[in-house]
Length: 357
Image 1 (cartoon, helix red, strand yellow):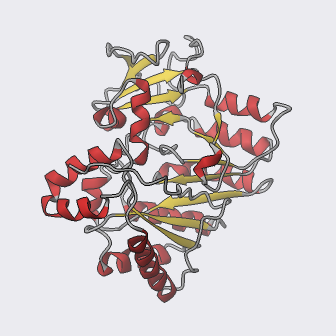
Image 2 (cartoon, helix red, strand yellow):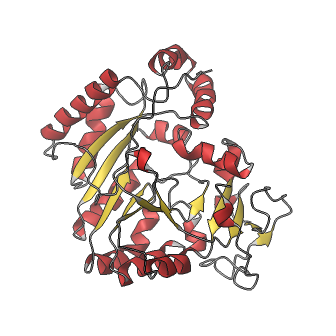
């Protein structure tokens, strides 16, 4: 089973309170039934507005460093994903379908039922110490965001970064989360001994669109403030301008405003990526689109009629327009992803016939 690495026996004492949760706001056990794939999980909910309606399934994983299949053609071979599911609730998130492997749905469950690998830090340290490990670059934030809101409660990332630092293992982080700044001292320490990359995802700066399509994330402006802070700290921060949403953020005004804001934040590079709609994300996004922008449904049916990715001609034209704007604002030419920048761009799979609405 694809999720049998999450089935290690729980340590009840170690799970009495999520790492980093303040004693003044204790979690309470939930009566929610366990997914069939997580028979040993400890279930938590929190009586705070930021976690209203959310359930956390705390598990002790068997392994944490995952090898990427060679057919993926992404610019990294190893990943760490301390969470499954994501409170960012981005309607387009390509990882949504992975929740179905847990007998959960790709819609509300993905947003509200988050799996937390509470022993992630100790596993990273153990696996880096294994004789077979050869120090490969590790990418984080490639499935769901490792700096989503749950990280403020569970604090899984500091021990992960500490282990990578102690073993001088190169790594990269892609995020929308401003909580990354909490770990800036650790990032500085790691940068002294190994190569690291930090990237932010900012597809657009329109606040009304942000509130509609990425309701659980920090605002684009706050993310760009984080880019500025990291840049001032000496990091070359790349920005993945993604996703660019057809009919919503692919017009000249949106591209110009977004690239200008990215440049003003001091980003080292900008890499555009058009929206792609894999199964799970495709259906959820289609429902959102029909509700919020029904006039765009025919346009999307045409654009994504052949599969998950927009036509190559559209992607090339979009990339060219971003590059022109980037040059105008003094940014380096956008290009393929550098494996040390931490901006994972999945390669298109073979064409697949899908239905949008």
